[in-house]
Length: 258
Image (cartoon, rainbow, N blue to C red; front, side, top):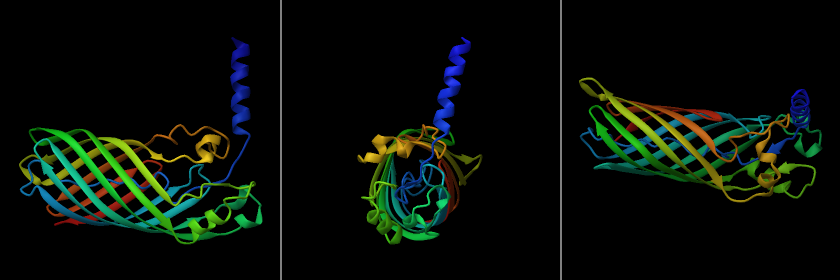
């Protein structure tokens, strides 16, 4: 038994001894976001939502930092025991590079601007129980297209054997959701919702298969690289709403319902 313990300790030591620096798309695992929908007790079943927000997150192996702002416009419809939403979004942000783990000259930049546009769609089945709507199963999808200097940089170094880079500028993400939304006793103008998401980004790239998108700088395997989770909190008072989302980043939005 003692030899088995020693064997596993050695495996962990080897895994934590390596390091890597990977440049990935700016919205990798950041393109999914909560899409509001009318609740079953709302007087209107079709609504338009406009929101502004900010996102703070890191790249896949936690070496670099990203910050971005986002504009979202979506529409949603709620019917009997189902709802749907669809919309578009635009993103502008900055990629802050930590070159301490890589001394190659081409990596020696402080930050690069990025932009992106895309669309989202969401659908749920739900049941109502008093002041609760239980959206027990749902599907969320997102498409994004990235541009500007950080995207151009990844394309320019894609053939360099000494640098790990994912040059993709188009991403498609799909996943399952589950949510509970409820209103206060005697006041259905005040709503709260809690949602969980689990999904992944589609498309084959060699870094995926080499495992480089799935390790931390110390070599530790990142279990939530293929299938990543995200938790969302939604709050609404009359026509004003806000969301807070956390996964491998932190995203806050405020907006209006029309």
